[in-house]
Image (cartoon, rainbow, N blue to C red; front, top):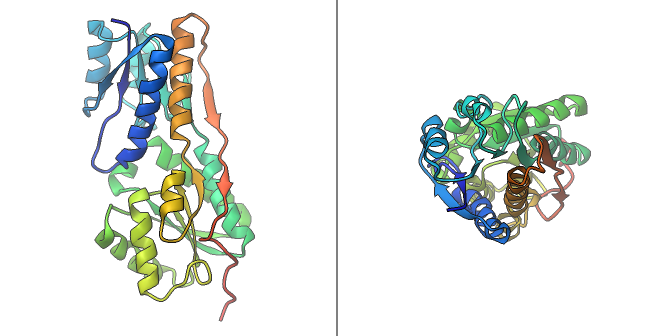
Length: 279
């Protein structure tokens, strides 16, 4: 069997539709190069890598849900089996990685709000467990956002948020309690988008006249929200295709270790506007 293993831990604290969109791109691209895809969805960490490399189940691996200090990386560096990460660890030496440039993404979001005059910005992040694991995509976005905020005179308050209305209600209450002057939100949590918009409506805060919202999410989430969201798209299909193409190049003896970062693009829609004048 000629196959590529795709390791995609399906955790309850992750937004599964984006993960599956990447997986579909991998599963549809691989056959065009003559490869089947073996899907591994358990949270097995290094054990899953050992299982693939020691059993001949697959010829190469694509790994997702990459942490900054990922326990799978020492094994990847020791094996001759080709691999590609979708995501960036802290140390990329000897690895091939594909990802959205998330540091630039965070910077782009806060830059947009700063240009509109917003000076107090709250970041509604992923579930707390995502940060406790030091998952690369969440950490890098936050780093880029904070760095650009310091250079733009913007105060940033970051609060992780679980999925659902109740978690968003608690998080929003905490934000306005701690920073009553907040007029801008950056949301990196797709499941929080609609609860946030509903709660702002209930509180009589108009979007974008009173509060602006910028999201990091798939375009489909942005355009189907109750207010069409200004957003940076998560290019899930492109990430999946790039990963397969780099892995196939390695298998053919053409590839080399490299980091491929997809430049972010911000699309302005109806959810962002000038900061309200101070009363």
